[in-house]
Length: 448
Image (tube, rainbow, N blue to C red; front, side, top):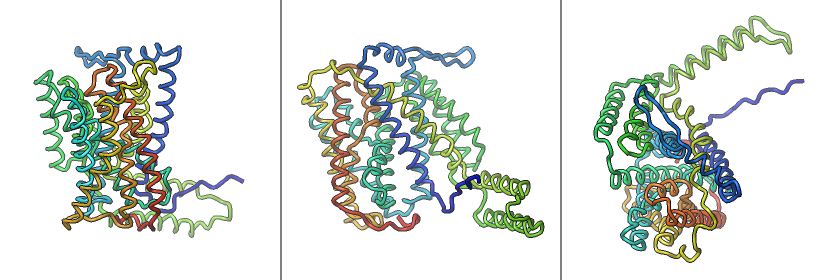
């Protein structure tokens, strides 16, 4: 007897899917990173270097761009990842779990503290020549944090997971934009003007409530290429595109519920009229009803939800692992151990392990004292302390920032090792504190 298909009999919210996809993608990324590290230090390491530095040409008529494969991974694929992060943050703040103002302000204050204090600590320890490295410690890796939370316990409150992932995304996007504004040298003013004009056009389309998704994506691609020609990080295009994607559906809830009930009622009426025998199927009627419901569901989904569903797997399963493959490895014999105590690698390590939790807890506590912000429901300060330690696991996003501000020299290798060591220690300390802090009973999804 054939097994019955498994159907979902509860509402699956957007954050749950976002969390699961990033969790699987983060696991794949860690595996890829370990394999890449082994490959780079094996007798076949030259083939890894050839793969990353092999040129790839993208042509648009008579115009073409020839760059190493590593460039396309870093500038184009990561734009896809930042687009996915921007869409999730927009959803959470506008219509999702953090739309309530006091909770949103608590998350914003926590994110600011988790950026400001580690950046200040790094700037205090690092020499003047390496001051731009503050962006390495001001960011946070949401995929790593969600993976560590999954290791901590499946019963940690949803509000804690949403809060930590949202603050991590805020830090990742804010540190990217700040570093671009402060340190980018514009190479082509005409290309930058085109990118700015395209973004302005996207804003106008959004104001006109246009929901033609292919038009947004086409203009987003033009904006991405223009930014690359101007010498600006491609990830900026992903963030800006996320800002203008419409978040609301054209279909109102009442109409969707009514039409769904009507279709199901018609299917039930057909079944009552034909009275099929036990085991006899009404395949044509059943499939027609399913197809109708699917069309209605597609129309009812907002542009933001449709786009996020399509790009999130590509970002998590392709962009992130390929970035790990290209940029995680370093040669074991390319550094001296005592150099890890230098001001730059030590500053990165201390800022991530100590500065992150100190800054986040301090700013969050001050925000709660003012009365304008409050701790998310079902979460207590012990859990927040453990969660803030996890934010020190900068991992891939810290590495991404390090690639921008440090040259490909021994300094970059030392910073990489500091990031990996800080991520491992922060993760272990956070898991320990979360285990000691205990659990709280979760509330329904809407109550955060």
